[in-house]
Image 1: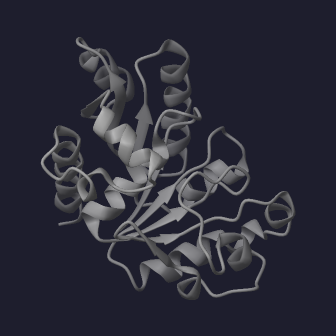
Image 2 (image 1 turned 180 degrees about the vertical axis):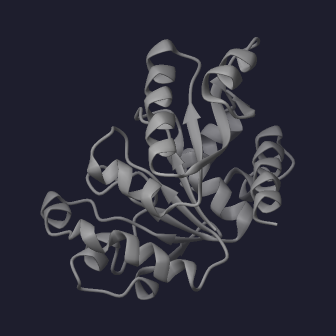
Length: 220
């Protein structure tokens, strides 16, 4: 299964969700944000190199915090050298080797943000309970429909005491998983690790485990 973790708005926690799902699913995470990579960098070849024809997808997969990761480069020159027409083929080659490929999508609605939805079977939309972020999530939902990427779940991140679950479910048309503010999760983020590797008994770890089970059920 190829799963796109998307949301339109930057800074809502897409990378955190993608990294933790990679841990729960035992798959490979692709950092597809060619210009503003947020997942741990690789010491060897990265996605920039793959899309520029300098490396093969599997040789560019590294391992960070118990997660297989196709990291992205962090230079403007590297981003400019990428041939976006090879992105779909790159992901499909990874899908031949891994049961789950999780794509951390870039923010916005440009072509590079839509490409993961072209190749994905399903998507998870990540947003926060703010009007501007929900508006972006609605636009992303419309794009996913156009590209036939089914919406599996909405992750409502950084929620407070009374998250607008019903409103978000009705607006986006999918069940909601809430992720409250958590010092434990924030600590894991700072270290670039899934929360289950730092605090396996935490509420955040339990929520990501359940989200992983949702994806597994979808595949079966």
